[in-house]
Image 1 (cartoon, helix red, strand yellow):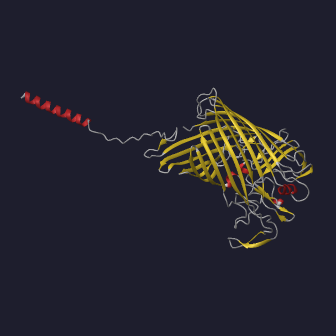
Image 2: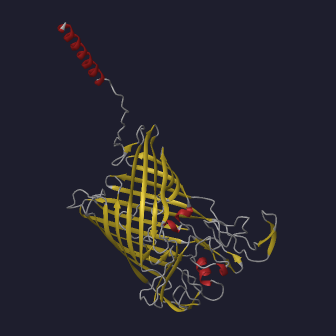
Image 3: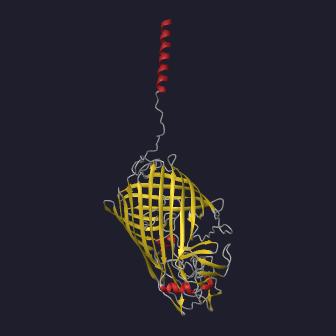
Length: 541
């Protein structure tokens, strides 16, 4: 009996042990884990979007900089589009000698292989706060947003006219180089790869993004030379407001644009560097010579009568402006510098570019607009627009195209993997034909006068000559330290000189401008020192 009982108990224990073992061995279904995979097709920093064959790279930067005698992100105090005035002696000032900027960038780069090649989408955006014009909360911006596919590039990016850039070797923003990289330009382009690093591009680009100004001297009562087209001038404009507006319900005359800038470029990129030849065509189009005169009534969209200015004397024929240029960038041996702490080129580089333009000044310079430097009772003045027109002897003139040419060069030397220094400079020359000169020097209609940079109201030459031609030359140097990878610490020093063909002439200014008083000023060549200190943390992979 005891034996039977022992056998039964033993069998039960075995069954329990076997059941426990089988229970422990039952498979447990776990959710599949999808790890992020590195995408090595397009360089460092890319990874596959889980579940797709598309690669993505996230990046950006934080930039903090302080500027002396420069504003709006490094524009030197010689004017340009900022119309900033400078006085060396500090007895009166109408601008800030020191400005600061804090900016954060974010970038997204998405790429995918297709039967037509790489499909790429890229965007860069952020928030920037620049003293004194921006609110303390900053201003949102974007400077890149484009798609590339099967040779096409559409969206906002760098102009295909740009052969070289100084953006990676300096901080200040020189006025002698027509670099579009700071804000980008909307393009519709196609690039054909011809083999051996050679490519050819045709591009249609927004003329307003690069800068388009045309001045009407026929109605001096509502226009000052150097003013922004679309707000005061009666020329072709890139906005929907201005003195050439015909009523709030009927649109306007001369605003907007009818033809993009057409760009053609032939480029080669190889191990030794790159080279490019390029050309551009731009439409200069003016509104009516004069909108003043008797008014007449017309029904607006609300069904009520509204008076608008009478068009008294037509408008000039449109003219095509053009620009041609060439550039070269050469990689040179660097002695003593091995490797690189900041993912930048570890070779010395030399770059040079030359551009000649008529009626397309913004391809030779990104400083289209007004220029002025005031030092005591001396003033350096100049203004630059694509073209001007007006009335001579009661008859309307043609569109008189402005000639602008520039040459720029730069050299960067790598001292060690953590230290680099660049030297850069350029020259801009601006000239007007005899008809344009006669109109400018006859402004506003009686006696010899010179109309120059805003906010000068009316300046009359009382001794000497009147010649609106002028030139700008600039030279600068930047030294940058990269103590660790992706951290830039540097300083950039730039000297800018502005002078006109009327140097030595004495003008009388009939109204105060800024902190400066009306009175006599001698036209002279004046210069400005600009300094920028920058710290930037790059956090792209």
